[in-house]
Image (tube, rainbow, N blue to C red; front, side, top):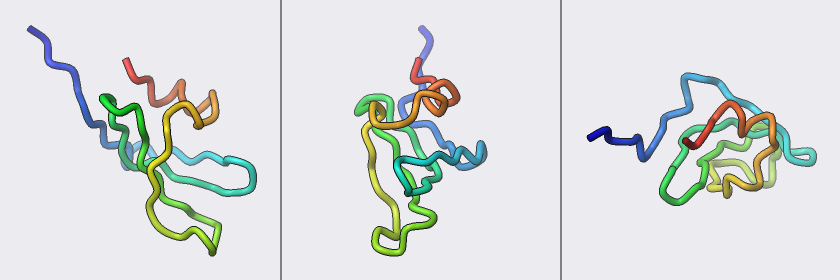
Length: 68
């Protein structure tokens, strides 16, 4: 029986994307919850790590992460 990865470390892939005017870097992908931990890079008001739903990420970035 093949065991699927539940959590994927994305730090080595250096995946960066923009949502509106805020730039993010993907850190971890949680397949069971379908969420991504991201670090805010350029917004001074929201510095730190956030958890974003996978559906809110741009389509080009979703192709790189691939949840299946």
